[in-house]
Amino acid sequence: MLGYVIAAVVTVLAFYLLYRTLSQYDWADLVGAVTAVSWVRLFAALGFSGLSYLILTGFDWLALQYVRCPLAYRQVAITSFASLSIGHTLGLAALSSGAIRYRYYTRWGLGRAEVAQLIVFCGVTVGLGLAILGGVALLVAPEIAVNALGLSPGLVTLMGVVTLACPVMYLGLAALATGAIHVLGHRVTMPTLWLAVAQCVIGPLNFAFVAAALHQTVLSIADISYFPVVAAYVSANVATIVSHVPGGIGVIEAVLAYLLPGENMIGAILVFRFVYFLIPLGAGLLVLGISELIFSRKPPRRVTRDQSL
Picture 1 (cartoon, rainbow, N blue to C red):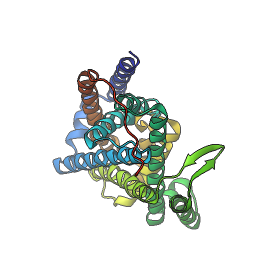
Picture 2: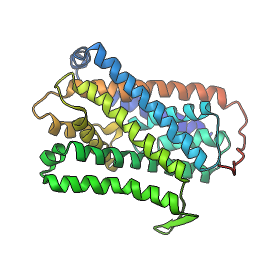
Picture 3: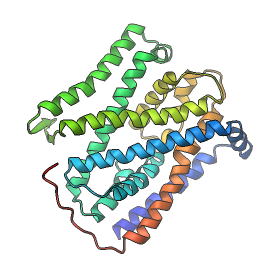
Picture 4: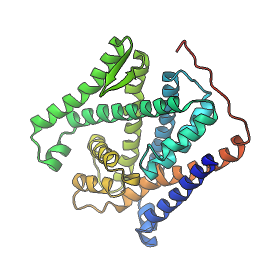
């Protein structure tokens, strides 16, 4: 019964957030914002959003290798898309996408400890992605941090180098650690080097695709290069994670106001929210509902840990 309650609560919250997001705007504003974007830009943004969600399935696939409980890619893709398409909009990833992941993976044989390790692994991949892409953006397009925060170019460059040093240290630990390490009193088993390298590849690749989707919608308003949009989006994403604001509502708008001062951002933001949050949210709810009807009738099974991974 707990699984059904979790699914019902998540569904209700998702529809409420969908209503709250759209109710902020007049219908004429919604229609005008969408129609102002060319079909080319719209489909490009949809394509980049789809690539992001495809890459996100790799987060879970790698995490399952880490906990040595591999599953079929079909199961990984269903779990990843259902949990993240809903979790991205709801916010509070540990309680939203984490709860949905728990629902699926325990049904498919993982234990609670393994699901917890999987969620932490995916969170580390997110952090690596933000650090790598954010560090590159600070070095390539430092004007965002200089203008928005009033920092000197030298300090912004130093921030970029320090940010990129964190993934390098992570790879070093993965290469050198022969067993578990202790972090803040907790015993942590480092992934193998190939898993750590894969994290450092797909982490920033995911955010690069999301920023590309946002860039396509911004191009409908002003001609601006890609990396300033990357810098703005990474900053907004970090602020969203820290604040737990569902879907980054208000956070992305505030950061982009620095990027394009004086511009009417409603069109770009609305289209971006449609293609990356709202359309996947509807599809994710559909996947969740159908899978509950199909898979809940099957008895759960226990996954055999693969010691060779």
